Every structure is written in structure tokens, then in C-alpha cells.
Amino acid sequence: MAGSELNECPAALQRLETLPMSDDQLSQFRRSIDNIDAAFIHMLAERFRITQAVGHYKAELGMPPADPIREQEQIKRLRKLAEEAGLDPEFSEKFLRFVIDEVIRHHERIADGPS
Image (cartoon, rainbow, N blue to C red; front, side):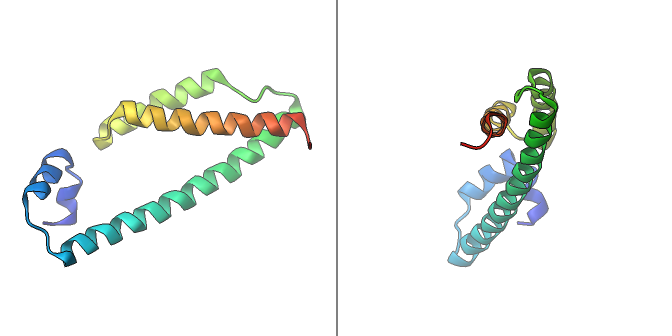
């Protein structure tokens, strides 16, 4: 099965579940998952480095840590991207809400100054 077929998600994944997998096949899938996970962690770390800079900038200007309008715009935009990518938009919203909440906590700590 070609990697591009996996991008067609639900049907391709259902077909995978019915196929017997050799250890080599399973290992290859797991290596791919591990690579994606590593890239994801690095991207998430970079996102948090940037949001930390945003938090410091907001604190310098006396802006509030949270921006509900921006958050709703982001959720709407990423739900649409999730739908286009074949990812459950509810899941993507929950994940994004978790990230946003963590960013807000960071911004609050920055605004409160060193402890």
C-alpha cells in the first residue's frame, strides 16, 4: 500500500486493519509515526517559543494575556483546515483549546512578572 493512500484516511485505514501485517510493515508504520511525532514536538516547541515572545510583548504594552477574538478566529480557521485534511474538527478544536489555554497561562505568568 502506497503512503499516498494513507492520506485518503478513513477508508485506507480500515483496509489496513483487515490486512495481515508483517513485523517489517508494522515497524515501518511505527517509524513513520515516530518521525511525525518528533516533528510535531519540534513544531510545538517552536510555537511556544514564539508565543512566549508574544507574551513578553503583550506584557510590555500592558495588553491582556488572552485575546478571545483571536482565539475564536484561530479555532474557526483550524477547524476548517482539519475538515479539509480529513481530521475530526472536534478533536482539532479540543487540541487547539488545550494549547491556547496553556499559552494564556504562560502569558499570565509573564504579565505577573518574576516570582
